[in-house]
Image 1 (tube, rainbow, N blue to C red):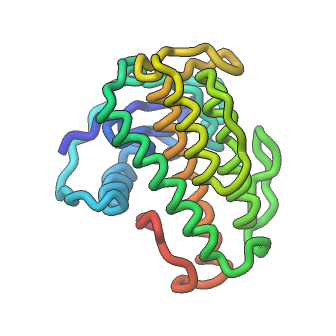
Image 2: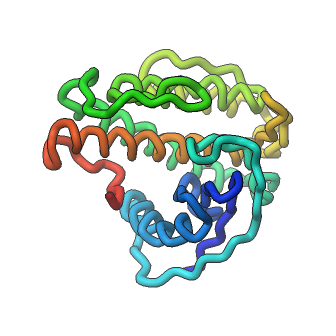
Length: 235
């Protein structure tokens, strides 16, 4: 199986995205480090989706973005070349279903944490402030990008209710616009380019970042068999 990758980096720090697997990604202190992790990420991603698991992978970098952002903390502003293309309804429905499955699974993982305010992780700060440590902090941070992501493509949304409920309402507001499948590219906050394709990918990507952090924290804090590995991460 060929995995077409987009490489975003700041010096050596790298994020590698799988272009054909919305939201699948790896990070590393170098491009080669991120590349080495990609086969396990794709296997995990396919298992999560319930798809057939491939035995071998061929990695190809199809796009590179040199960034001034703090890539080591997963700050990102890349727009894939493929995220400029129009969507058809079946493809949109497929990507939307993945984004909603991701939200539901994130909620399931969060609800399984025995103590939402307990964490063994040390305090750490990044470019956007303190890193979320507890399940509650990770959940609130992940849920509360909903209005931001939809707002970057001109859709009014909110962060009320669960992560699944506010995401569903955002998609409903999006679909009320007759032209939403045109996948218009918008220049949003901080001069970052956004499209509907990017929003769909970013939701799943952002969920995976913080679901992985939440699961790892839960294993360290509560034990290996206490919390289910809902996303089937390769840890």
